Image (tube, rainbow over the protein chains, first blue to last red):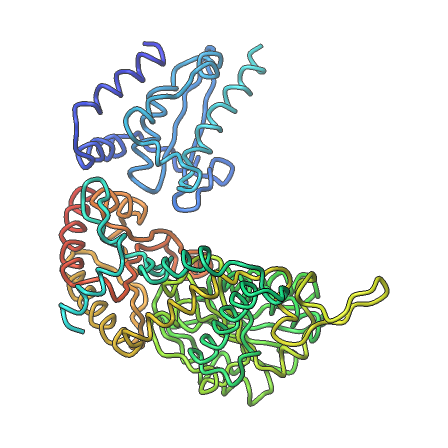
Length: 140
Length: 407
């Protein structure tokens, strides 16, 4: 599945709910089912410091594709981390770098990305792309 | 205060009618900023429409009017704080600027390498960072008063922290996270025994409790307008005349000068020496209006009613399993800080928001305090006199729902 197909699937999944609390319930479920990051990887260099909740992110590069893992202390943030990983993991650096992430806005969770929310998500997306740039130059 | 009285008061605050995500707004973030009554907003409008002119300079009618309003506001603030002279009231942009002013100017006049400043563990960043900057600039040391498990400062430790190197003590009157009302009169008495001046951060105190700077014997007392129903951008530094005369100006510019030549400038007298540039004379007039509004309700009535609200909120919050309170001092202001089990405060705050309830989450700009408590922050509900028990009931129902979702 392409990155955009994945994004569209997520948008569809969230679209079935009108009520905010139902959307957030889904996000909580996603957060709870996120494969936890290995404790040994919860080291300072993997932390994306947010004002309110910390986010951890790691990336592996094998056979031309990147696999991300992430986690957060806050379950709602974890839910969004889970979505980001679902969308971007398993793709090549080029695919990741050429992607416009529109699904967060479309499912109405843009406020979590506001710089003033300071939950580390915006920085996480930036970090995911930075990994892609780094692996691209390594690969090329 | 009666239910009818509160209903009447609520009519003065149009924003309380707002719908958030189609739900009636419940505003429990008054510790961050308060909503504005109609009379304050009307004062701003009136000032701009009928009285706007730069002050202290013009010979013309409007300038006189604006100047009178600004200086009347100064007198109003002086009376509100119980200051002995109106010249002891300096208008600033807020608490933060007032503390920065003292940290800089007092530091220039009285501090040198090896000296010490004492603050407390429950300070807002605005009462930490300016002193850290002073310490870095001068090669001084910052000392910190610790607290007990109820969130009360340990005055016996303060006694051991004070020495001949201590130049100033700066503590908050009311903690923005814990709600603790600190025994500042006692702290000032202890400090004065050793001839150490004290600055009190009154940002969280003046909206809720009666303050008399002469009774406290505070050397400096600061607060922000926007936390007491006035607009943002206006605040107050009270300083004893002897201190304000003894410290140099903070910023240079117009208004604060006596005479200027390229060789030498002499400074204006108090209070103008500390008000460089065009002051926020619209803001000062609106602040005076806000103080009048508060006095109209009566600070004692406000204190009693908010105490009732806080106690009721605490009582009802105890119904929730896993409730953990932070700040359980006997002397508390209108703040309830809590966590539920190990749920992250961000999650609770985000979901409450979707139900129309505004609370603050996180470390509330007092990161060292969160660290001392070993938590990522708290959820904070902070009340004002326009809040009601019915709102607290709705908040509790919403919180129960949110906790169920997150557990």
